[in-house]
Image (cartoon, rainbow over all chains, first blue to last red; front, top):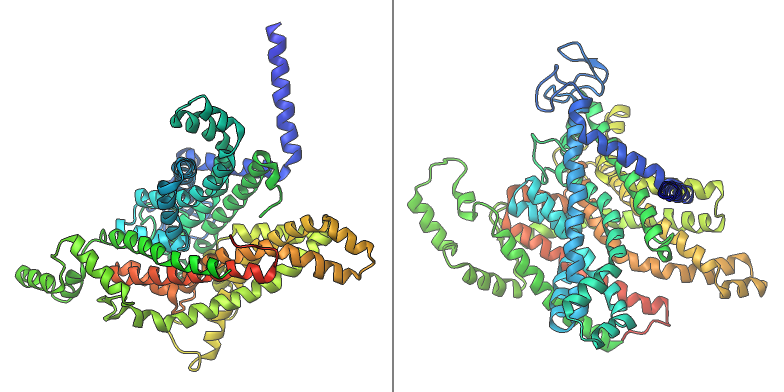
Length: 296
Length: 317
């Protein structure tokens, strides 16, 4: 009996997964690519014989050229003789870490603040809205640069800056969503039976806001990866020797003669990952909120 | 309407105040101060006593709150302060750079509109066609490829094919028109292309929505010319939400200008921002971000007001 229900469940899961893939093939392809990139970053030490910091060959070895130990370097070496493929894998660790973690933190805090802002209204709302308004008008990269200029060019600072940025954006979205919920009957009913504010917020408003938060995170990851890449490319993000996809392109335009491959590959990694993440983000949005389908 | 404008204008000062306050305290964290920047350099060994005296003269030893008050009073009169790194008043350093960035942005917007409107409209009209698929693929790619990398790749191709690289020393348009042309053309193209990727997608989905509306069906039923239905009835209504995007689009353009001015070595606001952040010149960073903020606030207000012109149904509460 139990076996049967279990196998039923499994086939149900498989068929719903299959339906998801059929409905959204682009999203499925996107998730596969994202998965591969993530695995590449996580298992970097097993995928490459080289170390990302040590000098393994002469400078500017061409792709498929030989390292000093005669092994083949897939994507050649950089201006210091370090293996580019290895650095891309390890760089992916930082880029993806920053890209995934900062929107999650930012949207989490932003969701709470957005709910609080909409639920309590009055002064809380006014203060929070002025605060978000004043930061929202500044273009993202400019505000990020200002933060890293002030607090330093480290992973922690870049991560916090990006989290702050996605927080500001999500407060506004969550607030307007919750303003719509606030008038709903089940919230009125909770008030009528005397539920505490905390109870209403955490048991009723938060669960109903989660789909919005998930979409914000899904869409935010790609943006965070590009933002980190831009910052680090300008030399205002995460500073070398830690490799990130962005800082590997820093100064690439001064080395066209010797290492054109150094200008090409990090960008391909960024673009493919971001494209895949965009596809996944769109799919998540479609699944979570069918009303938004096809928009923007 | 007048009340709405007045209320929006009244909101500008508090928003600016908040922004300025956050920024002021943030840039205080920048290590080193004006005194050390000025006195360090050639002979690193500066007498600590001289340094202390200099700091007192500049008011850097006052409590933070006093410095904040002084900065606030100064900024309220429209004075953005003095940049010790550039040895110029902040505004004098910003002013000549505006033209470059504005040129870039205007060409970028023109290219974006010229590319995205027909692309969006026709891919909606011929939904599912080969054209539609090509437009959507290019637009997805355009959103994924970072502007700075596109810039680098274009430079790589240019340097290979015609041996051109952006000059290290800035020359004016009149001294070297060819260089200037390249340096403006490619960043504008990249800015325009990337914005077009976003806008065309929006235009397409709004067109699809509007085309299934009753009033469009009525327009067809009346036997109007296709042109009149598509441009006069459908497009006009589809573009309304697109205009909303133009507010934020300019923010994207400024971001794009920051990286592309760096790649193509164009002396605009973006490159100035990067230079001041690298130099960690607090007053310059503060002044720049505030100026950008004021510009953005006015721009977004104008966009909001333009709804009324475009859609008479819009009521401002």
